Image (tube, rainbow, N blue to C red; front, side, top):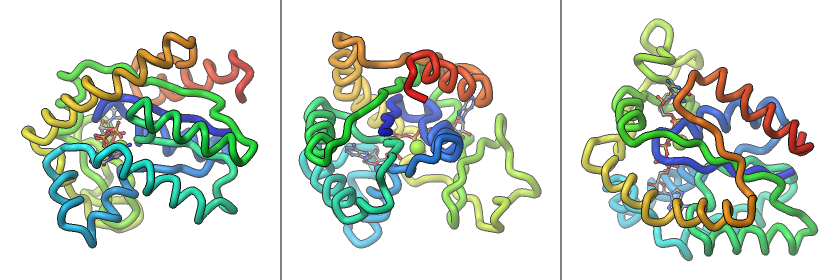
Length: 213
Ligand code: G5P
Ligand code: MG
């Protein structure tokens, strides 16, 4: 089973993806993490990501397909978060999966206003060590640190200027992909402005109703 999770920056993709992949036994494939890992050794990628821009679409597709090909054995059932963001990336992923006799079973889109997303991002903290996502207001860490003992940090692209750029890309590119999938009745829309638990249960219910899980 392969599921794609789409949504604006700060919509809760990572939060839900982590819970859903655990529950459904899916490999959690996160292109934000892949990009940040690649950027550790690449100044150009670092500058792109930190300024809120997207890595050029074909280049990102290449990184993803390469990663999927190399790690195929541990990635039979995948939850994709952050990929695809363009129609071209969706088509490339669908084609790659088809070539392996596989398919995209569901696309979920988390809907949230820009105002709420910006509010969430400004109080988001992530664990430097394990990547766990917290929110100082809605999902606070206990005793000021991560449960794994790691230090909590703010992402470099979580500054107001970069967040604005990330939103522009979402509205210009990923929205086109969502509209394209909606025309094919191929996307499960979820109201992302509720509590983490309510959204999680709603997604599971919708996947069940469609016979996907
Ligand atoms: P990323 O890392 O994929 P974004 O900008 O798409 O970055 P981001 O910011 O990671 O997405 P998210 O994962 O949707 O947002 O949000 P989250 O971290 O789960 O939640 C945000 C905050 O809200 C947290 O504090 C959380 O606790 C809280 N929260 C979550 N859910 C709820 C809720 O239900 N209720 C409430 N009240 N609070 C909640 O990509 C980074 C960069 O990588 C490159 C690009 O440069 C990109 O900018 N990249 C790509 N480039 C090209 N093509 C691609 N396909 C690429 N993918 C990545
Ligand atoms: Mg994320």
